[in-house]
Length: 228
Image 1 (tube, rainbow, N blue to C red):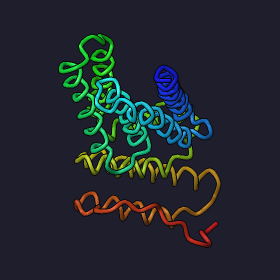
Image 2: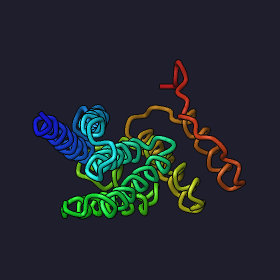
Image 3: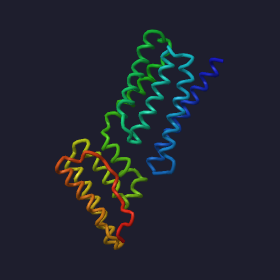
């Protein structure tokens, strides 16, 4: 019975990691359902971890499953830019380090456990070392999927400007707003649609950056009847 439970746990965790890999590929290429698949991968990983933890809650292998699930959760948090990602990452680090403690005390016969925990630890630290704006820039501007949408990126430039502003890169943040205004002006020249209502908001944002008063991110407001 224990072997079957362990196998179910392993398959659920493996399935969660496979879904995570496909979800990241979907986000990379801007395929549909990437966000939903990220959330599903975390659910599957935790299902597998909790099944094993219930039976082996004091073993290094049991905590390793939880550390892996927490790492998957951290990846989801970072990729979706949710608040509190660093707290989730710190929890993954604590669980991974606790695996080493339990292995040293009780399970040193299982040589693969610390190696797997080391992988989780290294991957978590590596992802935590990537600044928010760098990750956002790559996912929204450099991937093959993002390149297909570069000419409709006013909202992307605007949001990227916010991430840069939060990180203290004020000059680069202002340049992103400038790029968004160029997009609006080019669209106006190409289509004849009046974009002044959007330029007003972008100019106000740029002034807030220069004054260091951009205290809150708000989506660009679209009037009910924008000028044509």
